[in-house]
Length: 246
Length: 222
Ligand SMILES: Nc1ncnc2c1ncn2[C@@H]1O[C@H](COP(=O)(O)OP(=O)(O)OP(=O)(O)O)[C@@H](O)[C@H]1O
Ligand SMILES: [Mg+2]
Image (cartoon, rainbow over all chains, first blue to last red):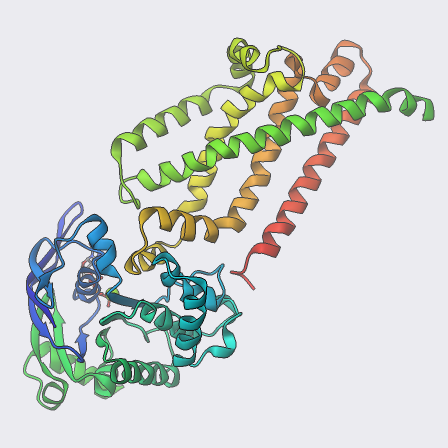
């Protein structure tokens, strides 16, 4: 279970940017939790805080009751392995093959050759890319690259998979196949998924719960069914309206 | 013409050999020093993977200072130390120390700017997988930058050929020395032009073979 308590993040640039202004939420094990909002609302910032890439200015993030926002050094590095992250831009290692990309997190965790061979094969089968093991990322389509990124993020058996707009660069057909894969992973492996998006379609397709973020605050949160059927906040109405109009 | 070649071939061959020796050895040593320095200055910058203001400032200052001294002056200024290290003040070995002192900061900056081009997202992705700072350097930054580093290597080697010719003029031997001795002191321009031709040839070969190698290695743009 992930509990976020009054999370605030202010970026100190020439002016102070309050990207998160007090977010509180509880995400249960096995949820596919959508966070939807317009550009600049603070979605990525929130995800980066949970991914331990950003230190919150205030508030706490608890995973199974343990406060992770104050971790430093070795403990921080260790804890990151329990959280998988995928990004809109994939961020694969371009000089490594698909196989070696998926092997990367295992390598740095000190796994042996045989273990790596077995686990990577398993993961590539899971994401349906067994035949691309020896290809390089530059030889793959966007959807295939995202599959590699998903396999890589799952390598260390994380409890949580964080996804920052994983389908925003993909066409609708590829988007659907990636979302199906994420749902499959959620069901088969029981991984909790937090998915950030600005497309209401993503929420419709796979989320069981959703929060609408606007200007660093949650405008509303609840089950996906409720919010899709009867949005209360203006932000949610806008997003659903936009989604419906398309 | 045949007589001319017969007369000067051994001289030019020796010069060529000395130039290649100086360039090769000093390139190797400058990378041994410059590569870690480049990584260090990249990693310690503000917002880098391991920020450290003090180390970054000192390194930056030292590198800038050395780089602002014209090479010919550096060679002369370092002559006593060079002699101490090489045990002689003439011949190719006598110049290597000065060449490395001049080239290592150059290499460090080159490595730094190569690493700067690296996509920050890839580094962050590695972090989320639990990579330590050292692992990020050895398993992400350097391997991902190999094609650019190879291109940088050719630039450094070519710069060092130029430097070695200057060092040659003050006693280190090599093609630069021959060009100065015959072209300037003895008015035998033919010999001088021949050395220039040889240097141009080396530079072309280095440039095209390194470009080819970089293209072969690079898996990103295919
Ligand atoms: N590193 C940073 N330094 C300063 N300000 C930042 C930084 N990162 C984000 N911000 C600011 O914080 C706010 C929230 O940004 P964030 O990236 O979280 O938005 P987002 O909801 O992910 O937007 P998008 O849909 O465009 O990705 C924005 O106003 C942005 O300009
Ligand atoms: Mg974003």
